[in-house]
Length: 302
Image (cartoon, rainbow, N blue to C red; front, side):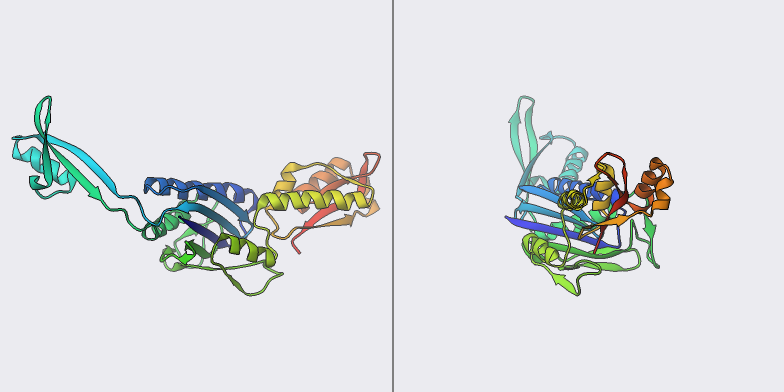
């Protein structure tokens, strides 16, 4: 059994689209695997602002051999019916069929045996088709290429059993060949990362200051918000929607506390909080008495 690792690396994907896209990538790939009679143990999808990742564990090295039986016309049926049966079964003559007795008399049966292909030969088409079929609320066509995607596509990792798959994404005017390299944090890391499998991939990304799991980023932000606010005697106004969105804007979250000039505190609370939430992605902080504090919390990607 072997592991399949896919990473689709691009320019920043809008936060609200990342989670659904990761789920769709998992569905597209796993549905295609099942259609190709390739069983697996588990599949997990991840997303960051610049990448969609899928790891599928427990794939076999090859498809199982398939034995298919097709019932044909009666023995002695007109030649036209026999020839249609042979064409449908992909056979050349009745010598490749066998007669079987049925309640209605002897009938021709075709027994078709298909040897399973190596999984590594089946996967490239599945991956490239999944990348093309990912549904986006909005997409764009870039440069002189006819290929459309949510943001410019930069690279695709495709490893099976630690080995690079032979394939590419057709960009309708160019191609992106499958690779085994990615990039870490846009600002805080340098150089490419060469990976051999998911564990190695996740470890190297963390060393390059990328937290792959969106849930882990969200939990880290929540913990930092509570800690930083409490240190100043404040509390955070709960906002699960903003928390989920901000987790999709950063790969290495760091919470900072800022101050609001007193002159702006004369603006109604509802105006301040809605503006900070919608435009700055700031979290509102409350004082010990429940009133709005002249402070805010922001999640940096640095």
